[in-house]
Image 1 (cartoon, helix red, strand yellow):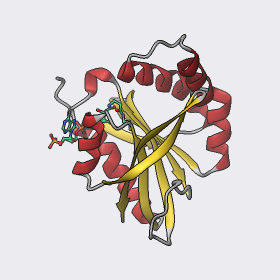
Image 2 (cartoon, rainbow, N blue to C red; image 1 turned 180 degrees about the horizontal axis):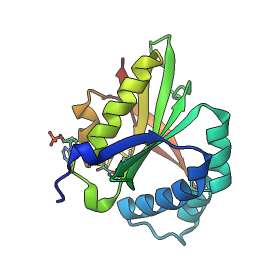
Image 3 (cartoon, protein in one colour; image 1 turned 90 degrees about the vertical axis):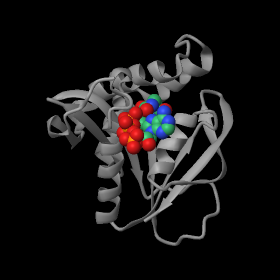
Length: 179
Ligand SMILES: CC(C)(COP(=O)(O)OP(=O)(O)OC[C@H]1O[C@@H](n2cnc3c(N)ncnc32)[C@H](O)[C@@H]1OP(=O)(O)O)[C@@H](O)C(=O)NCCC(=O)NCCS
């Protein structure tokens, strides 16, 4: 495992100039994480829907979607996608504003080096600054690594939540953190 010098790590908000990069990087880190066959129908559809530069550009222009890029000496090694003011399909007893952590991916060779921790710390700080009351995310129930990672930041499991993957809908876990 690489030892990370956190002084060389920078987290910046992506602009529309990053849309092509984010589409490629997002696709690669997704395939790396799950070893899916990119030609399988649902995977191909998921890639097309999620890692499409035009869609990413439109999302950034819209203002409620934020992509954060983690760079080590200016080399991107991870990213997160946030959606402000989006609520989960789940009844929660909180009135205020919600923000979804839609994606967090670290490049394989940097997993476990503390990059995810820096990204989540940055996300929590941003959310607090913007008076978001609830951070939430949906995670695959078999992704024990990610679940324990989120638990470390005091996210708790609320129950099952639908997750659209290509043409199929799966039941994944909803995790929330009240700020
Ligand atoms: C999940 C993910 C974002 C975590 O980022 P990371 O950079 O690997 O995590 P960090 O190195 O910052 O770890 C932070 C803390 O999380 C916990 N953690 C990380 N990996 C863990 C593991 N395999 N098992 C248990 N806890 C773990 C640790 O407590 C660690 O704290 P420590 O420094 O005290 O050990 C990253 O592993 C990843 O991109 N995985 C593949 C994609 C994915 O699953 N994304 C989430 C989809 S919902």
